[in-house]
Amino acid sequence: VIGLGGSASTDGGTGALAALGARFLDAAGDDLPPGGGALASLAAVDTTRLRPPPAGGVTCLADVTAPLLGPLGAAAVFGPQKGARPPQVARLEAGLARLAELLGGDPGAPGAGAAGGTGYGLAAGWGAALAPGAPELARLAGLGRAVAGADLVVTGEGRFDPTSLTGKATGTVIAAAAAAGVPVAVVAGQISGAPPAAAAVVTLAGLAGGPRAGPGRSGSLAGPGRAGAGAGPGSGDPARHRLALTNVREIAVFSGSAHPDLAAEICRELGEPLLPARLRRFANDCLEVQLQSNCRERDVFLIQPLSPPVQEHLVELLLMLDAARGASAARVTAVIPYYAYARSDKKDMPRVSIGGRLVADLLITAGASRVLTMTLHSPQVHGFFSVPVDNLHALRELAGYFRGHDVSGSVVVSPDLGYAKPAAAFARRLGLPVAAGAKQRINDEQVAISSIIGDVDGREVIVLDDEIARGTSHRGAARAPP
Amino acid sequence: VRVLLAPDSFKGSITATAAAAALARGWLAERPGDQVSCLPLADGGEGTLDVLAAATPGARWHRALVSGPGNAPVDCAWLELPGAAAAVELARASGLPLLPRPDPLRSHTVGLGQVIGPSWIRAPGRS
Image (cartoon, rainbow over all chains, first blue to last red; front, top):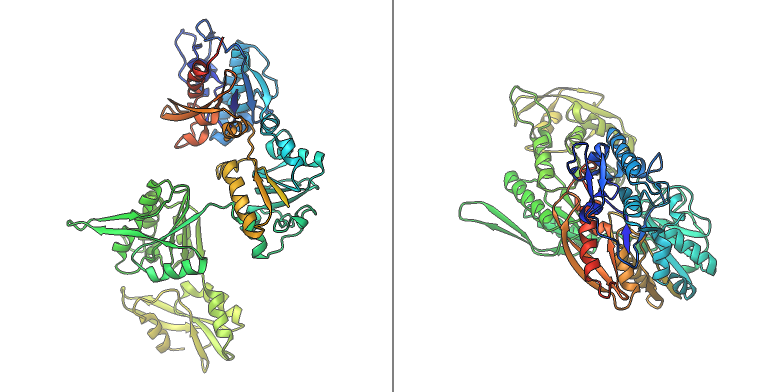
């Protein structure tokens, strides 16, 4: 029995047949290199030394019913999932077509296109029988008996789409449950297309607020009484979502030395333990980090604001990222509430470094697969990262604070024009006018605010800014001529 | 209430066995009195041997070191089934996650052939 599916290649099974003794030759009579890319130059197949198949025969359990060739075939449909760009897909298709010319057999058989054409190769080259995997495995696993003894069946997969109902495991379960008259619920990462009416459906993407969550398709699985009743609208009740969210990987939270109190508070809020990390300094001043808890296949979060001493904290974070990646973490998120280097985002003088970009590259190189930060000094710093970045802000919370006070007759002032946009958004939340200072930076510590654009005369002023080093901008703004 | 949890794998995220276990944990956290059973499934791809092993009394695991899809060695498990049969899983020998990065033109299924060889020799009673 050979399970076919999830392959990296589109070699028509030639690699497997070659390992079993077949030879795939080019026009000069030399062995082709392995891989689907070379098959287009295939000139002859020599099966004289191919080992015979076992006497009991060979059954291939195919995960798809695709044929070998054509628009529904192994190269066109599955090549792109394995990284092939359009010209490479065409080359793989040509290779598989050439193989089919020389090997014969039935390239149109359902499942011939499974595992990059390995279904075809083993059928045509080694006499294997092709069978759809899901129903066969469900039968072997005793699905029918198990369904009959249940009051509710829950099935699911990463992505549920119309093809899930044709010979896939999820579709097999739904059919078996329907036949037995047992209600069925589907949990999937993502749903595309209409789910069957008989099933209640929960999408993890919908629960997590993912971009492709289908509106009105999130059902509730908390009470089996409801689960069989059909897909209801998402309830938004966190307790009801807890069941499906347990499918998400376990998380592991570590803190660097920059702000352990913040990390401890985050963990208290999450109800997760803050896991221990050890920081060691060698005699030569080099650092070493050891994460002292299991990270394997976990969703790891490393909390480290880049507060002074910035360089110490940065290197420490880089070492933690490296340690987490080396420990086979499933995903590593750098939680950097203060991304200090964000201020260095352009070459505003000749021959200056752009630290914001460089540090982003360092974090990714060290192993960050995602970055969680706050109030980046300028929004374009977001674009320095080639991994997902969540840039949180606290304007809503700050506005909530001011709403508790009488702020009528106040004005929101941004000390410089660069921050006028968030200041305007903040002022809108409070229903206040906005003004901005025209700021000139003399050096790192000194600024001059020549004038204020907007009306501040006789008003209470709320200054909004993202970062204060020494407060000179704000002293300047307070003194600036209207 | 008797609940049957029979998921496929969540490709690239978790195996069917882990998905079923996670569903069971969540379900029992909400309704500890229910009778929950797990039946992880597969379709021929990843997890196929786990399903076969769970469904077949007397199945025995073996290991073989084979060439992965990008030539790096892969420790590939296969299953000896009662009655002179063996089961192998392409995803374990030549699967996409075994490559550090996709290589559509040069990746191959040599490892599958290499694991078929020993599985078939080792399975006893072969005529």
